[in-house]
Image (cartoon, rainbow, N blue to C red; front, side, top):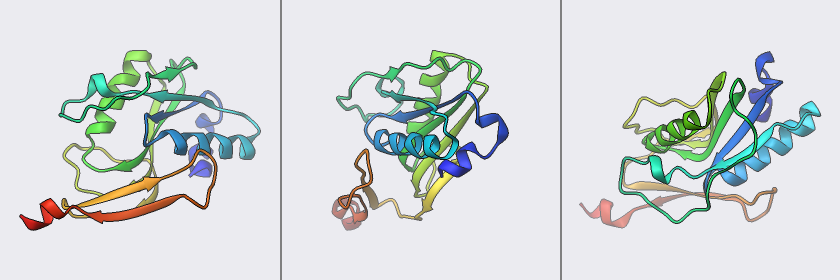
Length: 162
């Protein structure tokens, strides 16, 4: 994914990678590390708390946003672990545009599980895993590569019974 992100010429300068708090943090760190190793240029790295921008009942205690790079005029890559309904991405887009006006916004996800409720498509996808609504994807990623990393498909027993 790191190669794909920096492949377009315009992405090679002024790149800011922003991980959505919790799920996208470790993946964003890893992508920045890989991009730096490939290009010898470190992109900006930040983390986004989208709770204020959510339109559903999912609210969690999360650390505040931490965006140190100016995003106006830059290519911003929003990073999350799993793309499902598109609601998290919509909230992240609102949050990013409140911070400035990027030249372009791209989306990188480790897992795309389909079943969108909003018209959202990832630009960079690690793996497409079609699921049903009664299934859930659990991703465990350390900030650095680890033997403890895992992606699991879990069946929600409550939804499976209905």
